[in-house]
Image 1 (cartoon, rainbow, N blue to C red):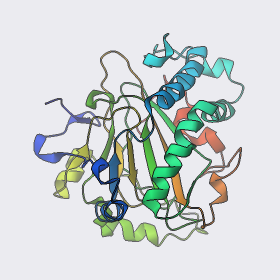
Image 2: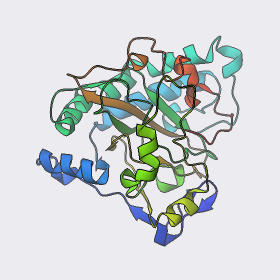
Image 3: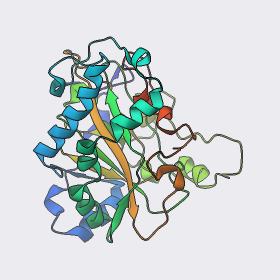
Image 4: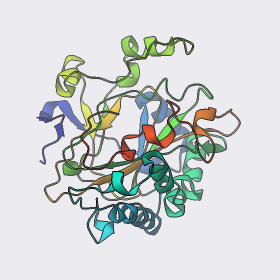
Length: 301
């Protein structure tokens, strides 16, 4: 069994589980919705076709080749360990917005295939937020466990995160992980639901303690899986998720993307809508880790 590493620690076998594959239930949408509600997530394999994903992957990595962060051929996604991004990009946020606006990428993340599966899961016509969280995770980095609530709660109360694998992601490359049963951790969730948006207080939704110790203390497990290109996992706003460490021994960058979807009949939070959305903090795409050079170190959401 390949080791799963979280924040530098091996996840013991007894604290590790496999994400449940729900692809066989696509013909039974009500069962899918019940599983999404009960487990907090559904995993669906191959929801976006291979050609569309490969086009998006190459488009993104081509841009990173141009700033010296990815080796040729771009499609392989191998990091150089160097970067000219700060020297060549006048504004890091504008650069990352332009990468996230690529037509091939948008076809994968916001196109007809994604719209169809999200409409199926939502149970009515669904629409995506324009603001995209594109995540190139180089070796040595990870994303800590965190809740997406309250960041996307100002428009609809039926918002879902769609996490899409933009390439094959084995366990060594730091795939998504979910804390089992975390949609029932009411001692953590209830305070988030009570947040006063007019307050200057910053909500704590990220788990800063050791990840392995956290799930052990909760008598839970970390659920993860190897992902293939075009695989999709959809989860609600109160499911703790993050990524394992990228431990690729060939320097491969994990490329994934998460986009929020909601019923088309509900209003969209204006922070995440438009050609140049302000984002959560008002800094636009400049607030994202993806806007930073791949040589920067980060262990945050």
